[in-house]
Image (cartoon, rainbow over all chains, first blue to last red; front, side, top):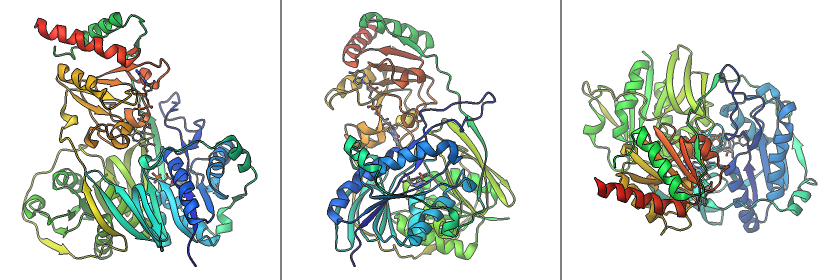
Length: 269
Length: 305
Ligand SMILES: Cc1cc2nc3c(=O)[nH]c(=O)nc-3n(C[C@H](O)[C@H](O)[C@H](O)COP(=O)(O)OP(=O)(O)OC[C@H]3O[C@@H](n4cnc5c(N)ncnc54)[C@H](O)[C@@H]3O)c2cc1C
Ligand SMILES: Nc1ncnc2c1ncn2[C@@H]1O[C@H](COP(=O)(O)O)[C@@H](O)[C@H]1O
């Protein structure tokens, strides 16, 4: 039987644009909103294209990384809803406060176990090249390893998919490579692979009718001892002068800027 | 002493990695490179060197697995590069070994290791402890390179490259300019309407004696600049005396690459762009109005001298 389905890994990440500080200088994680990790949107967009070629179903999988679920539920749902609105037919969500904040060892174990337990047999698992909070680029490769699937990271172009094989372009620091991988494969995609379009209103409305399966660790027969303990998260305070010149007369604005730079001693002419 | 495997992708990074590893235990080097790694560059640190004649992550995965299985190291240290991240994440998944990237400090505590790493585009520093064995991929330039101290045995590794086939490799066109060495950097973003218009930024940089860099979309997506001019968390980290961000919104992933700059200037027509809160001086106006005047003022200054 030819593999036709696609799984997209979607993470509700802490938003790096909103960094609040507790009075003691530590990072105020509790009230930081979660949002879908930017590059997962590229993975969803690519799934739209691939679904039309493969003709199978698309599943979104998300594991809650930052708890507690009580305060994160709305943000998590929004991320999943975006996946459903864009392309996914169904979503699987694991949100268990006993493993938040989760580490990448546990996340990849949950994802791989879930895929096996639910009998999913995807041709492709698509993920982002890096999440916007942790940015470790390791979850997709770990999942591949656990499932025994092939893996290609940093895919900036899917060139062809047929006969149980996929040809992709991998974007590395100093060169690009054309690679051929057997299926099933896990691919992490880069931001340059496509231009994600936001879902339409109709798509968003349709999404609410699609099934979302909440799966507990108990359902999966999993129990974890955390390997990573976060001891501290400290905000790096950025102290910039923030002098904003709103002078409408451009000549005057430029002269003021040059005066400032002169005083700072950073101009050589 | 505990064995530490040091994975080296570029001989030039090896000195720093060895300096970190020596403090933690007995380093064993796994060096991988496309063409035969030049022996002189990777030997002399006084340790055993395992040499892999391939720079593909698929091969590195098998190499690290075979070394790990036979040597059972407690720590694996390497650079935070794409190939190393890919290979070691695959390997880490196999044995559920914790892995951290962009690590800026390491403290050994017996059964555990404590490290610091940038988090949320480096706006937050995370301190975490993990149980060993652990893989720590470090940031460049957190220590000074170690000196060479003695002889090394070199052992060649033979491994397969797995089931992903390499059909073609194309080198990128890079400028070769060392943006990280420039005193003044002019950064360009999507506020520029065309590649042609970047000549305004080039002229400004020339007048100031600086270099031009840009945001990820400009370099990686539009390819208006070579990729070694890409500044940010997934590109270069720079620390010039003066960084002038033009038509750049100030996304955290970009700003983390310039946060060590002495002075940051922003030119952006949108008053609410986040960049103004992350800069020392800013002009709220159209770059197409500001740059010609800035350039002519600087020309006038230059001719007065
Ligand atoms: C995991 C990850 C890693 C990333 N890594 C990087 C990285 O390393 N480096 C990086 O740069 N980005 C990176 N990004 C992308 C980053 O999030 C932003 O998308 C990007 O930096 C935005 O680039 P920009 O400022 O050029 O464009 P935009 O955000 O589109 O900003 C353009 C700005 O130009 C202004 N403008 C428009 N016209 C004019 C005009 N005529 N005059 C003056 N101003 C004008 C606008 O007001 C706007 O503020 C990464 C993203 C992710 C998710
Ligand atoms: N908790 C999670 N749930 C679902 N997918 C995830 C999760 N964490 C990471 N991923 C996927 O792995 C990619 C890389 O994440 P990271 O390894 O954290 O940089 C993300 O873009 C997601 O596609």
